[in-house]
Length: 428
Image (tube, rainbow, N blue to C red; front, top):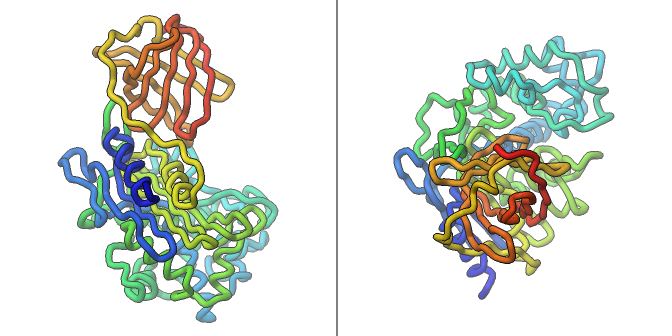
């Protein structure tokens, strides 16, 4: 089986098992090996994902914002060492926050998107860029600029305002004229949430079954995490960046050179600047983009179900292409034997993980935290009964649950292949 067949088999197994909804593009040495949509773009209307489906790309937006700033530097309209208060009035002028600090998340600016108030209230309310900037300006810095690194959506909202103030154009218009049109990114734009975006996937989450994701007002994200795109357009984008089509050699080098904490400008950099990658998460969507410069390899994974481990899928496809070992998923059919569910239900804990197992409506469910500690409740189905264990597999994410039939121990193999031993704390 060649690499293309391996990758297709890997993705087909995930899609058939309801483990993946979205689009994947993989390219190696100039050849697109895979470009395909899987599962549903909309569960409500039963619309399928295709290679043309548009997704909210969340923080993949930051690479576009960073490129816009570097383009303005290249045009001589600003300098990366300039203080941000030269462009945004009354902004911590005494603390020396520079454009460079904002680009590489070393500014120390406060970030409202990580506050509980944001998730509980503010993400549902309209907010202008000016309102966001005023909130950021009103809060003290979290640390002295340049002394630490703290990933910051707020920093990239400030860069959005910077782009508008320097160019005299709305952020969206500047990107349209200087990036989207020149690079022919026809399926990429800013998602305002109210304007109709053709072929835009719906965002989903999981609680017992697939549900609509929590609402987020798209007036907030803008240049931090507010764009939509397709896998094909993102591939065009990465090719334009790596080949110096948009930025000159000096600016391209700055974008893809790691600063003290492994972040360039809009990208996480690793392997002596051999790879650049970024994830993107916004309500109902999770994405991963990887560029390996040494191997001329690009992997793009866009999913519209937010429990999906896009980073793991991206990594596995990359390893397959580079002839590295990958733990392949397996097809399985649930057995029809009765589940000894009375022994299994309860709360299980280890030092780092919590799980709650429930029996409801003749189905066994597990509630567990995933990325960012968010809780998901999803069904687990019996696979085998052997050697005093009940082996179950989950829906929506490829995991294995092995219970001893007495119900005291849960051996959990997560999607990354790590085994966790959880002990029952109490019956529910």
